Amino acid sequence: MSSSILSRSIFFTSSSRASSSLFISRNLSSHAYLPSSSSSQAGPSSTSSTTSAATDILIEATTTTPNNLTIEQKQLIDSIIRVDQAGELGANWIYRGQKWAMDLKGDKETSKQVEEMWENERHHLNILSKLQNQHKVRPTLLYPLWQVMAFGLGASTGLLSKEAAMACTEAVETVIGEHYDDQLKSIQNLINVENPHPSLPLMANILKEFRDDELEHLDTAVEEGAQKAPGHSLLSAIIGVGCKVAIKVCEKV
Ligand SMILES: [Fe+2]
Ligand SMILES: [Fe+2]
Image (cartoon, rainbow, N blue to C red; front, side, top):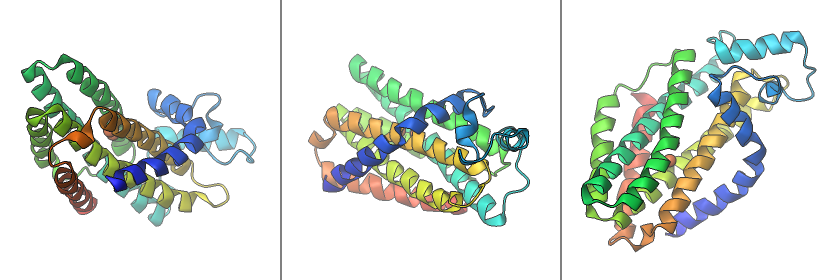
């Protein structure tokens, strides 16, 4: 329980700092990475003049496969996309399983809450699939396995009780939120140079947006009684370890 509260306090702090970037990445995400007239914030730092050359680079980075990333940048972006696409696929199937269970039990209110969170996950997966195509990243080979395991996790906790379903969401979103935060730090290390490749700040904005969405899901789960689930600590520990193992595996396979 304490680690979850700690995580949320970290996220709350970073969430408020990131608020101004939320609109930017949501805007970009909604437009298939075509930068809008104001999207220079997602490209090179604002100290750069918005010359047509800079705009051309930004458009190229957001609409075509970048061919001028360094090996280090390419490896980091590829690894982020592969593992996050797998994670978002898992999240989609967890919520699918939870909704199936809630519908089966006739719990319309929880079903609606799950559906709302699931809608965010559909958006996340959609964006990561676009990035996967853009950057020509091989998806994880474990896609079918994640689908079955994630649906099973969502459905079984949902059938157990609403609180168990929320405990599952709390555990998953805690790990995923921390994971996005770690990725954000890694990519920020590469951005802190003069004129970073525009793909990097764009990826950072997307990670911030997704991290903050996961934080909202975590809060919803806690508000809806996650910590009242029977065996909450054990359930959280098992699911949390499972998520961390899945992340490590997806980074490689
Ligand atoms: Fe997500
Ligand atoms: Fe989520």
